[in-house]
Amino acid sequence: MSEIFDENNMRQVLGKYIPGGESLVAGIHAISKETLITGIFGKCIRREEGLFPDEKGGTIELNKRKYGAYDIYLGITQSCLVIAECEKCSYLYQFNDNPAVEGREVQEVASGLLFDDMGTCYSFGDIRSCEMKKGWMGSVKCRVVMKNGGYFKLVLPKLGGVGGGMPHHGEYRDMIMARLGGRNV
Image 1 (cartoon, rainbow, N blue to C red):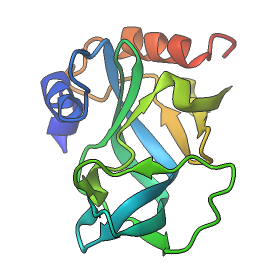
Image 2: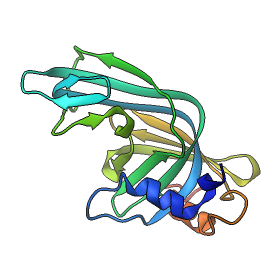
Image 3: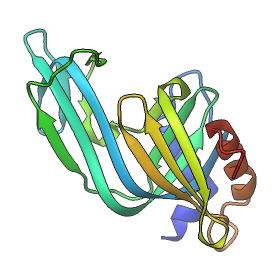
Image 4: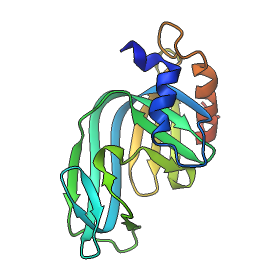
């Protein structure tokens, strides 16, 4: 558990999901209270571990959900929001093999998309809204809603854990909140 509150560990975990040419600007430990990651994917097939490109494949709507609190790392790059689990979690996966796609964005699967990697990196342009409210003991409750209907209900703690393993937590939290538009908290 103590390695969760370690800035070097956080950088390593978030680094797996940062797009090429980008770098981590700020990152913190946070708590996800509820998650819905959603997407519609075309020309693909579903296997046990993910979606894979196939010219003869169909269109699949995927919802990846988690109800309940779990530890995450939350980071920002120059143009992205990055979210990664601190420890392996289980999710509820729901599939629709014949979704209504009219007026909705269908993403083509260029290479394998593993279910574990889905919902880890979002362009700031993919974010529809971000609401922030004061929480208990200096924390901030944050609800990030994506343009495709997915969302994250997060708690951004005031402190970065015990032991001093995250010395920049306060500074980085302020940077993340400012980038997400939470200046009014």
